[in-house]
Image (cartoon, rainbow, N blue to C red):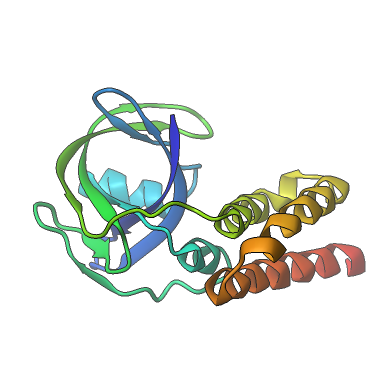
Length: 188
């Protein structure tokens, strides 16, 4: 199973890095698969730890992909790490094994501490639409524009039916970033 999460790591200077990431969940481990090169990979290899944040605020996902990375954090409980303040739950993890790969190494992590902060009340279709649009944005260099446009048109249906101001703001950030990339490609 893959869960869409926000991974927080610290660099050697103690600066927080937040990255939206699908985490693979197994019976006894959480597996992080960052692409090479990435700040998340560098930070986990240096520190040996990370925090997996479970949030329903889709602005954080969209924000991280559109240059908005200044989200409130607090100290983790048992590791040298940071937890997003606006998270429903979090898992503090320690790296136990690496399976090397030229593109995406598998970082097998053990949960050291986990906590619930607020109840999960479910996602609406607009939140799903923003998450899927964020994933499209993160892979936009590899996808044909026709596919991107088709997917966004479908996602827009659920967004328009169920969005609050939060989802509309996140959607706007993503659409602005996608249009900027499209303009750049079109104008060379």
